[in-house]
Length: 246
Image (cartoon, rainbow, N blue to C red; front, side, top):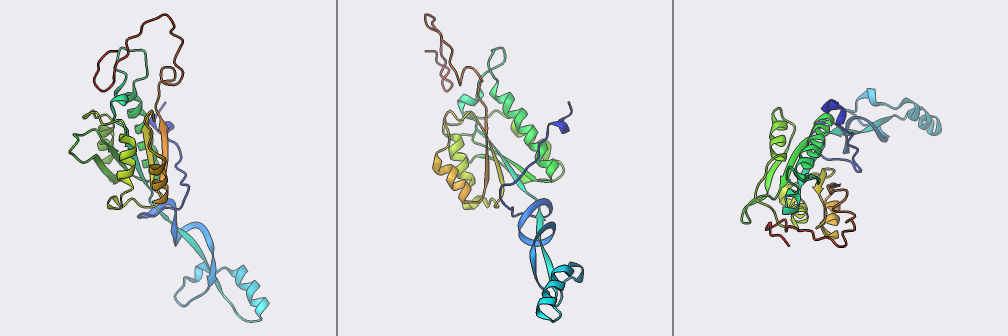
């Protein structure tokens, strides 16, 4: 199956704000196909936008010549950010073990999201916290320029310093800070196992800022959702942060 066949449509839940000449509905009036309404004609308006039916109805009712023009919602380029949880849990499981390899799933899921974003004409960015404690998050701002796709693919496969357990929530709050200037309607795909989930306040703040968060749950279908009956057996359990066996 080709990579193109694995893309999916991006359907914003709210109107976006972004650069011109895109494919998503904007909150501003302008050139586009999505009809917003009509208003009285003003000098300088494009006569091609005159709504002749509405003009005829109002002219007949008022017994005078009245003209109305159609207004459309402008179409804008959307923005998309992949937020990857790089906590110690998300480094499980290494090759050779029969459980889900979370790094591989992050890379595959992220690649499909990147391809879907470019297919829709979005500017795509990447964020994770796999850096030293005194460093800023690993951040690649959204872009749809030629050559940005390989940058994102490299970022999805990188393995940095294991981040703290609450990294998904911290990064979501970092992204909603006014300094990051995320435009309303930006998709934020959060790739995490959510065993340490962002707080309700973090989600609410993201929504209040006009972002469109999309959680992508990455969990082993057996070992992290329905632990089997192991009565009478001794299992070594490894701490994902230190590697110590218990």
